[in-house]
Image 1 (cartoon, rainbow, N blue to C red):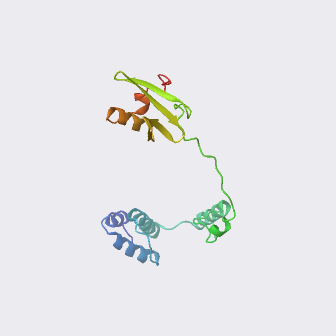
Image 2: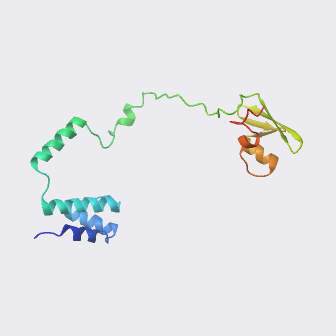
Length: 164
C-alpha cells in the first residue's frame, strides 16, 4: 500500500509528544527518550518518506560511511575523559576588566555640580566619594543626584574629555 506522506506528516503535527514517541517506536522498532516534538516529527517524517519512496542507495550508504570514517566524528566524549584530563592544566589570559576610559587607580575625578566641587578617588577595587566606597561611577552619580544616570556622562569621562 502506497502511503500519502504529506497527509501522514500533517497528521504528525496534531499528535502529542507521547503519541509521537509511540509512533517513533512503531516505525524504528525501538523506543526513544527524546521529548523534542520538532525532532520527533522530523525523524518520523523522514522514516515515512524512506518507506514510501525508498531508502538511500547502497552507493550513497557506502559514501556516507567513508566520509564518517574520514571525519573521525564523536557525538559524545569518552566515559573516562574526566580522569584522562585531570592531570592537564588549562591556562588562559584574562582580559583587563578596567574600562579604558577610566583614569588609573589613585587618580581623582573632579566635577563641579550645583556650585559644589565634587572629588571621586579612583581605587583598584572601585571608587570612593566622601569616605564611602562604591563599585561604579554610576553608583557614585546616583548617590550625588538621587537618580539613575550614567557615571561616565555625569563625570564627563570618555570621548569629550578626561574628567580630571
